[in-house]
Every structure is written in C-alpha cells, then in structure tokens.
Length: 102
Image 1 (cartoon, one colour):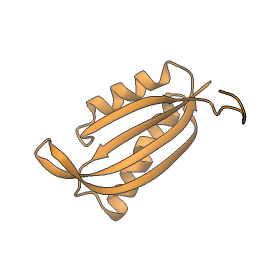
Image 2 (spheres, helix red, strand yellow; image 1 turned 120 degrees about the horizontal axis):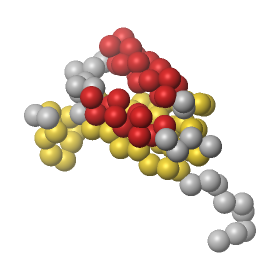
Image 3 (cartoon, helix red, strand yellow; image 1 turned 90 degrees about the vertical axis):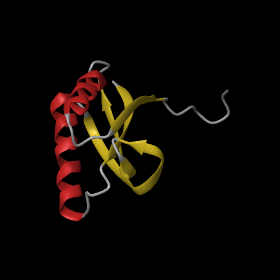
C-alpha cells in the first residue's frame, strides 16, 4: 500500500451544499476504486494564473489516501470523464523519514 494525494480543480460556482455533494461523490469514487483512509482538504477558491475551461478561478480540493498502485489510474480515468472537474493531478507521497537520517 502506498500513500497518494490527488489535487482537483472544480468550477468556482460550486459553494455550500453543492460543493459538499461533489466532494462526497469524488470521495465515494476513490473508496470504490480501492482507496482507504481517504481524507479531503478544501483549499478554497483561488484565482487562476491563466484561464482553464474559460474559468478565471476555481475551487481546489486535495484528497489524501492509501491504495494499491493501480488505484490512481482508475481515479484518473474517472476524473477525466467527469465534466465537472477542470483539472486533476495525482502524486505519490513519500513515506516520512525517521529523524536523523538523510
């Protein structure tokens, strides 16, 4: 099992209950694909450096989870087909190093 983090950019129009429902839907998709210990961190609405899908701003949400190596690809495919997701990026998080080691 490895640790991953997926950063998702959602449309700026999502607020309140609509945002909660969207985050719950993505969380459920991660869990259905095999992700465990799913945590979400809502980073808020930010102005973008350049327009993405004709949007000048977006809502960032980071999902951290533990899974097998095949799960991030399943999640990437799900998010690529989802028209409500402007961008998504997944990275593998390194395991914490013990103190005093390089």
